[in-house]
Each structure stands twice: as structure tokens, then as C-alpha cells.
Length: 283
Image (tube, rainbow, N blue to C red; front, side, top):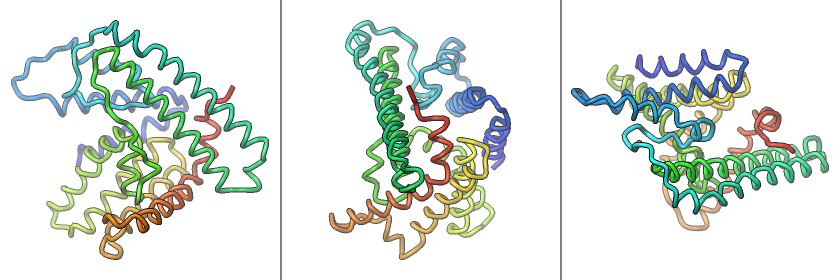
């Protein structure tokens, strides 16, 4: 439990800084250092060069995926991989800019912010998804050039059949970090205190998603964003015998996908203005 509390406290303290870049750097190094300590084994030889290479792998700073220290390899520039991927990297950069320009023109020209509330939010979400996905692809290609493992950070989140599944498919490296270092820490702590599994799960989900919200910004909107998705996941797990999380036929699955998108965009609308202002890449 103490381990999870330290992580939450560090996230909160980082968010008190008005320097957005500093927030990202602090949390990035927190994730990396925790991974190093978690992977370190007793009597293991410490390779400082290897550790420093892992800690200061700048391409993963903003988007991830945040590869665990166990998977980190010694840095080695791969010339063949560079020649194969350099064009793709520049293509992804241009696509990020094009997506931002097109989305900005559509949102502003059509004045969707006043006339079609959720369409406006959904456009911002789709823009974020496209740009975030492309940025993660850039990091993956740079990782290959540096002889590092290439990890999946998005796994078709728009086809998720529940909010629980969505957060397992969206920014997967961050989700895995939150699950292992906050949710699991508190869940097993509560179980050891002989709290019922249902209550332990609910408390742990609330804490994990509150931290996830604050991770993005220390505002009431992002805090409510985290609480909202925590409540929905508790509902999905314990209501109607967890039927939402069970696999169904194609027709029912299609309805679940629609439900997931509607539920997600309602929660996303809490923070879409902030994302449009600070994250959307404009010309």
C-alpha cells in the first residue's frame, strides 16, 4: 500500500508545477525508476551504463510505450533499420500535422462547439487518437533503430466492447503501469485486511483512476474524468453478473461497441476543451 501511495503522491506533487513539460519529465522518470527497482534482483551486478540508457531514452518521454527495464537491451544504432524507417518517421510527423490542421478547420469552420456538443467532443477525441497513435508509431520506429523491443501501445480501442476493455487497449503501457503499481497494490492490501473482494476491487479502481485523471492534469475536470470511468468499470464488473464483460454474439457485440463509444465520449467531454487547447497540434 505504501508503494502505491508514494506513486500517487509523486503524481500529485508533479502536477502542482505550472510547467507542463516538467510534469511529464518527473512522471516519466518516476515510471522508469520504479521499473528499474522492480526488476533489480538481489546479488545482481549493477550496470550503470545500461540503467542510464534506459532512464534517458528520450523518444518514449511523451507517448511511451514505457518498456519495462527487464526488456531493455544495450543501445546499438541499427543502420539498416534507420534506412528502412526514416521515411516512415517523417511521414508520420507530416500526418500528425495534417490531422491537426484538418480537425481544426472542421471544428472551427462548422462551429461544432456550439451546435453539436458530443460531435465536437468526438472529433477532438478522434484527432487525439490519430495523433497519439502516430506519435507512438514514431517512438516504436526509433526504438527499432536503437535495437530496442517494439511494443504495442494501442490495440484497436475503438472496437472495445466495454469501458474496461477500452482502457486495456488504450495507451497500454500507461494502463499496465497504473494497474501493476496502484490498482494491484491497493487491491491486495485490502484483501489482506479481510475486506470483501468486491469492496477491495471498488476502492482500488477508484484510487487507480483518480490517479490516472490527475496524471493528465491536476484539475477537478480530470479528477471527475477518472472517477467517472472508475464507476463505470465497477458497474460493468458487478452488475447483471458481469454480462457486459462476457463475450457475446456478433449482434450483441456490435451493441456493446456502440455503448462503449457513447459511454467513453460522455466522460471524455469533461476534458475535451483542455485537450483541444493544449494537446491538439495546430499549424
